[in-house]
Length: 457
Image (cartoon, rainbow, N blue to C red; front, side):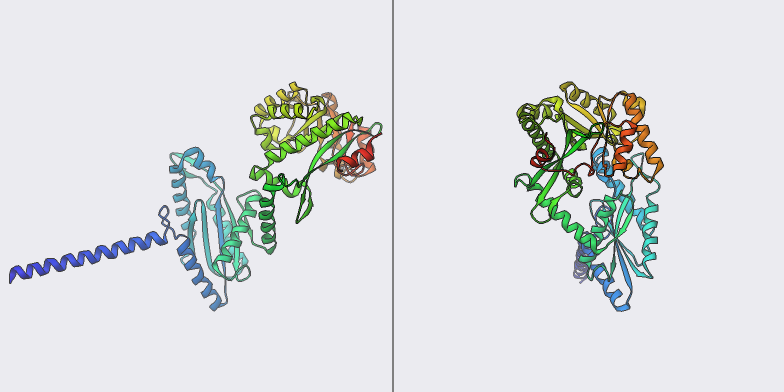
């Protein structure tokens, strides 16, 4: 009997242990299914469930709630430079720091990567959300200690509100995500509320990016040319090549609508090569046909200047299009040159040795000095249009323009003013000794055939 009783006790103990182990395994599976293993925060599945419950409570109680969609700034750079172990540790530290600012009824979740979401309930008004967003921003004002290093990182936040910005979790998350991308585009480490206009903008961006990838293949790109006029006799001396996109849905688009997108996606490289090739070919055709303008100016993007084979690319295009190097003028923005001193000067010197003319575009918006300009292998500076626009009403702009012209003259540089739209501006520039000007006062950018018709002798 005692043996039988002992066997029953042992069997019962084994059953209890098996049940306990099974429950523990089920709880672990449930934990893994609903929580992020790195930070132990709720994952997307649990976030959706909690957000739907929060929406139901807000609907019943006639209250508002907010969704804050947060993305860390420059996190990829940390991952790439310090490794994924450092990146993971940083994410754990960010999660812990964010948890310190949460109220008991708020939800903090990690969606994956460096994306976090905060759900705030029982709002009294929009001011509550702004206060919470500012509080989150402050959490990033001091460093995170990772691998004996102090790492500074920011966060960009997009905010959507229930019920005005969405009636379910999917819509609220999508709209908060859209607003977050606006924060990224406007300088990072800030927050923006969702508006209906952002959806329209996001749709247009998606449409443009999709069709931009095929625009060259479909022959939708166009090169227009804006005359550059010698102020001493009002004769055309050159043109600047400016790209346009003949979009099948949106019509003829200016560079402002798509070049930044092309930079972000890397499509600026094939587009830039195509523009340079078209411009050089057109220049050769004009010169062969007796239309003897001196220069064809083409802008180089930041991505193009970073390309190691830039000089070889220019050399190949000049040879393939029979364009003489001294007919070509490449424009590089002043702000880029200031950031990339050594490498930029080396590439520019190689281009100059080919015989290509070089110009600094948007001059006056960076931090150039007389001593720095002496080192650059450039022949021209182009005064940014922002200083020309208000010449008649802003005396300081006139003083700046005069100083830039004097600086250029002291270095024997050609000086071109951009954005000239009024006779007063043209006369002021001429009196100050500016050599050339371009702008709507003389001509808007035109197709090649129109340039020949309007400006050939």
